[in-house]
Length: 448
Image (cartoon, rainbow, N blue to C red; front, side):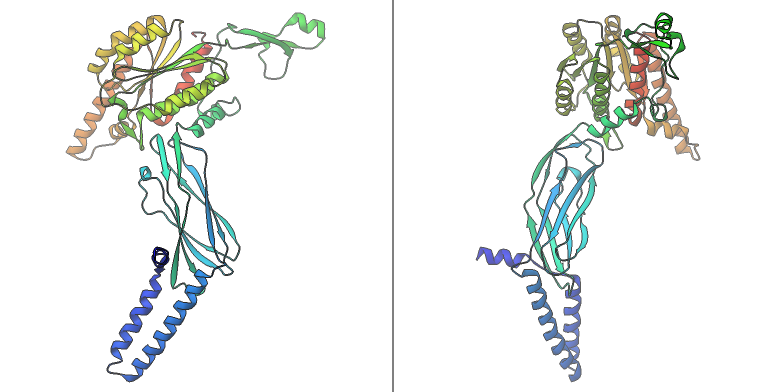
């Protein structure tokens, strides 16, 4: 009985079926006054039933089948378009129309997703679509529902459920990490916004003597080796390695502010992963600090195998809090755990001079023992509002408030610079490039 009920529940009627049924009913009603219409309606009803039976056997023929398989990466990237593929196989002897309804994770809040496709007999098609996750965590995909109708009449639909339920974790953006890594390559760095930094002298480790090629710095020519080899030879230097770099992320309520769907803390998470990868490739040691009302996570700076994976897992687990972050807890954690002078990138969102006065003594103390770079977020929406020419009294008021906010943010950056704290004020979407530029600048100046 249950099997029969499941079978009945799998049968759906297409729109054309309801229209034809409605026309037949209206014709039968009118046939009460015109006999010819009644005869036509009876013939039409018989034809209608015959077509339904034929359509039913086409869809439920025992040898026919439709299969679907979802293909996606083992982990998804936060804030990026992630490609999902559904491979659909037509095992019927005739062409069929299908509607693919993939039960997407509820966290995506997509309720109208569907793909229509026509499949020829024995054809295999790969259907592609993108999803754009805006929060970290586990995303649950449900089963795939296929609504199949024959291409011959298309009066009935057969619902087929394919068991493809799957849990996938959304991690900090690995796609963004690879893009930033590519952008830092010397051949395309300038076109992508990565600045070329002037090196001050040769405060770098000697690497080797090599043959001079066009483009090398002629000031590094080794004349003794040139005389011995009868060709121009040059000293090659490499940047000092194994410099300790820490990324400190504020998990407080100020970092919950959203931009383009992503919160500020997620921008900081993606940038931390991308810059950690670049720094590790430059043979520096990278570590992580996170804090909210208490000190949360500490990963000691290292350049060992698996360090990037450890940072990735910790970034994935970061939680957003509803309280203000405790900077005193950060200071004591740094004092207790970071013994060597290090470069510390602090991601925070200080909006008012009052909040700056509260954390300024802590930042000053940290900057005495370490090289502190405070990264603040520029509110691009407020900047656009301030740049907009007002045309009404309300817009004048909004423009004035926006300019006051931007002026206060400039004052915050100025006060931090007065303390000797390096400061970056960046739009969220430009965070990684601006931070990498500061990292390369400090490295080129030999400050770390």
